[in-house]
Image 1 (cartoon, rainbow, N blue to C red):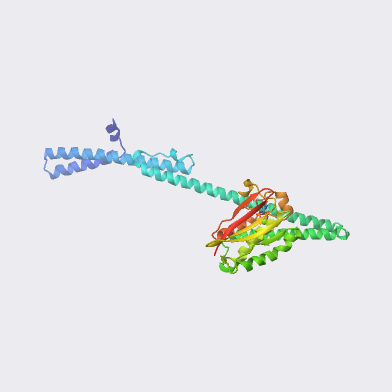
Image 2 (spheres, rainbow, N blue to C red):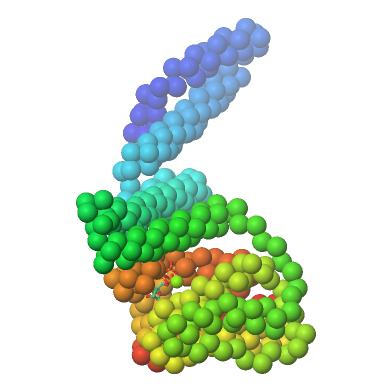
Amino acid sequence: MKVFSLLGSRYFPEFSLIFILFEIMFYLLTGFNRDFIIVSGVTFMLLSILLSILTERRERAVKKIKAVIKGINRNEFSSPEEIVLEGSLHDLELEIRKMYNKMRSDIEYLKKLEKIRTEFLANVSHELRTPIFTIQGYLETLLNGAMDDPSVNTMFLKKAIRHTGNLSNLLNDLIDISMIESGQMKMTFVHFIVDEFMQNIIKEFTPLAASKGLELRDNTIREGLQLYADKPKLKQVLGNLIQNAIKYTERGKIELIVEEEEKSAKIIVRDSGIGISTEDTQRIFERFYRVDKTRSREIGGTGLGLAIVKHIVEAHGSKIEVNSEINKGTEFSFRLRK
Ligand code: ATP
Ligand code: MG
């Protein structure tokens, strides 16, 4: 049955024609040798059938591969297991499944990026809108008469200026984030004397801590201890962590600690503040994430600070860690090389 169906193969006529031509040639060349003609005839016949079988199979395989590729392009498969080629093409089947998996994960990744981008834009617009509307509100109120009321005019202007401050902080953070994420953040690493550096930071933030009745202190650092870092970026990290510690602490103290280790030093910023739940500690490094949005906004936070801190610490080849207990306090730490 199979042979008959093969005789109907679309290539069979071509092979038969070649066969007849060869037979005529042999007939003329061998001077009518009957046995030779019969043997060669049968051989050619078998060869033709064999070639037909092979060509037919190849055709079928190519058709199946084409159908699979079309199916992938039209998203007809929901899992790689649905891609099946016949036995002899097992290796190709595996390769196509691998390609399918890669294509799917690339698409998923692009979709995720697109979602992050949209969320980021929505967050930025939202954060910009709040201070802009507030400033607009104060200015309009002033223009509508409050300007001549000495009991409120200065207060409204002060509030408006405070919101321009928030706006400018937000823009600076956004510029930082975009520089970091587009790989344009230039790092300049140097060895520096830690003691002197930390003293300056303590001096800079003591007034802010004192304004909330908090003590800001550091520990004794070995004289001459040097660490390797980008100094302005490290200052930005510590400034962010200390400002957070002050913002989220009502009583007690903030400590800036340097623990020397063999080849590095652990830098710790510890507070005795409101603390962060375990659930939230996993998210606070995300852009715009704030545990308590209302409270954070009141005290002027947009939730970009720790995202920037994380990037900078990682650019130092380190990792930022957080340990916290609700109502007890929070500790952020990372290591720097000597
Ligand atoms: P920004 O730093 O952009 O001005 P922010 O301080 O709100 O705003 P992050 O510094 O990124 O944002 O911090 C994210 C959130 O993590 C904060 O909103 C706050 O809820 C929580 N958080 C950060 N540091 C502390 C801390 N020391 N104690 C308690 N909660 C904290
Ligand atoms: Mg912050």
